[in-house]
Length: 263
Length: 148
Image (cartoon, rainbow over all chains, first blue to last red; front, side, top):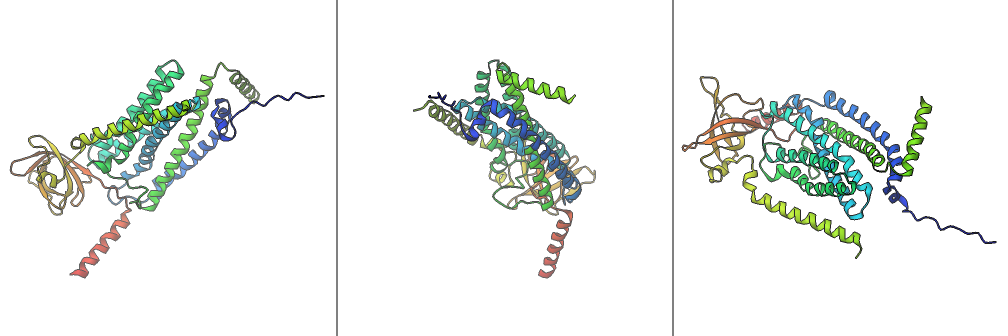
């Protein structure tokens, strides 16, 4: 007697299988809380070091403590845009839906960090420089970054057809990415009121070690926060886009059941 | 060629063209992207004449003088090579000090006297505890006494 064996359905192996929204949805749900807890913990430690352990600056006094929020926020605002551009490029080349979703999930967080960097910078600038705002290359290019984030969010939300929205957004993400190195190097290329980098990969940091520790811990906290929030937003976007599919129906039914049981 | 590699070349080529275009635009606007000019540039005639512009540099040691009205301040701004005398009437930012960076906005008179309408303190990238600065000052004083 011969048994008919059905050929197994070919699916991508390894990490690539998570490129399917259906596979990534539960993974993101499992990972996000870990990143969120890490973010909360590191923020508490970082802010404690920043506000209670780090010494007073010889020149600026206590005002300098804004760097524990300002610098990590500014770093994240630039880095998130590059990650968005990366996913946009992957999406355009590989035609993967999840890449575009990743890019759109990151945008609001990047915009928030960008706004925080501009706002804390203005508040610090008044007592330090004597003005809230100047149109120097660093500040202007950072403001442009905020508008690029707004443009990206507005455009992807404005177009009804998700495939066209993805493509249009990807173009803004890629074009706008050119601005990021301009922001970063603006203080070297041109005379700006904004000071140069205190921390860079090429030379020793020009700040006391506890100040540096507080700032780096806050930077890692910002990373963790951005990853956690982006994962949750990816889940929401997946559900929204795949709401007509069978698997989303099953997931929602299962979640409703566990919630009902919890009550 | 697979459609995927075609798209990769298209996206990569597009981004490369864009970077080149932006680089050209930026190099063309080099002059206008500068927030301030150095005193040396002013002496070389690179600063705009007949309209307001900014000069950036260090406030020269021992140059700050307050006039009798208590509001007008005169000082000199330098990039260690050239010195430009500045007059300013108004309040100064807290970090405005001799030996520290500053950016002044105003017009250059025919006599080489710069009349500022705005003075900003330019902070540097060094962050140090008060104690460390004290230690540096002490070491500096000690080395000066040894030289004398």
